[in-house]
Image (cartoon, rainbow over all chains, first blue to last red; front, side):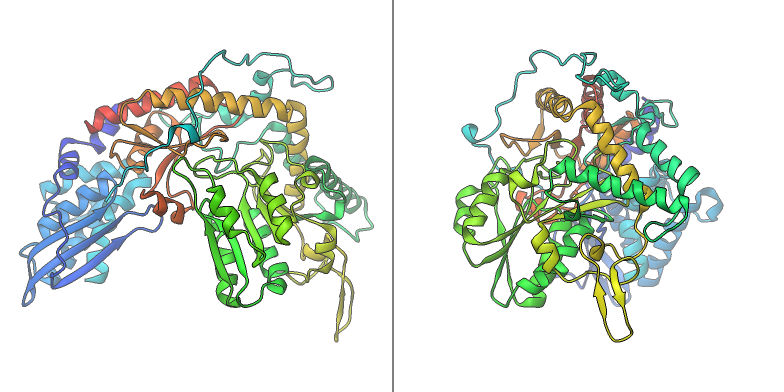
Length: 140
Length: 441
């Protein structure tokens, strides 16, 4: 059994984000609510955004998913704050490019993304990391 | 929000069976005319059981409820068809067509004998269980169901035995009613008795739950349905090939199953229907092979089974399904069944030793399917870790979303065994689960 690959996927940062996700809660009064849903696996998160004119002031999320999708949604939620809508969409496109293409993507990947690089070795789990980012990129 | 599986009520549920005496895998089987003299011999017929992953782990296959591996006899049958026969069937005058037709129809006879149908014409080849249910829903039921009629299913149904009825009910203004289950995952019989009135035109019920492994007492239920004048379709996808099926003894009107869950190929399945019902039913699809005579103004359809086999059927797969039945005969259904039950008992006891592991489905009568949750670890994380440990399981809702919702679960991990699995396979499953606990603690 090769535990090294597993330890990369389930590294401290992903496990920590899964255990104590950022701004995890239901916010019924949010200005914008989006749903990230993967019908194949059933992962389902709601993203709650408070906006001020064109920028996202505060973001929350709530729902159910695996450690990878929950951690990835947590990181996204944190990084959306302070972005304009266009910046948020661009950031999500960058993340998705970086995730699928690796270093060749010519994207400035922040340290917070690094843990998700391991998902590339688990093709069945790519969609877990992509889920919430795709929702913002396509539906916001 | 993740909810705990409902509390178990001791006396109604399985008490963990003692592992007891291990089955002897080398015991002699009662086969005089076969090379297969033991379970070890039978196991050696499955080349894919030796597959390794990219880390050189032998792949331990515990996803048999999704599809079983194929024995050499079945693989050879497919290769032989394309290498030596390969002709379209029926109406052929040349040697290859005559041979292919003869093998195809011989396979139908094998199925007939295997499920003890009264007549060969009661065996319709389909593409699988889903096609079988849809065929009945869109022909027989399409004619039978009137507005206000009831169609009865159970909460255990696979989507393939739910959606065709849901759609038909909506189309016809009929009511779709759902039999609930008890806390251990058995059909709630008092509810069933209450719901099974003469208003129910069709009862569509699974024999074995693909998610929980529950074996339903279909013989008794069919008898109850008979007394109400209700027609019965049995989804036997999880049972044919693992448990004896005798359609005459069951007295069901229809029974559907797939080849690929009983060591046969994908793309082939069977609809059994009582001769008198099949004769009265309209065809489902129209085209070649299913006619007696065609004029521009009208067509006279062929008699069953051909009436329901429009177009070129999956010939090689149908013939290989016959080979799968031969293989099961060589091993012996009673040995397959005993092996499955021994693996179930061993696996249930071994997994229950893991702290934080919650078995989902504890029916008294179960097939070799173990569904579970481990603490609050998501089923997909567990499946990834198990895959890394060389163990192939399925995770998710197993095409039974309403069942999962009724249990308050987003999904489960499902380990499903076939007779060729070993106790060591289950030991490895346990090791993988212990590793997952370590990673997530």
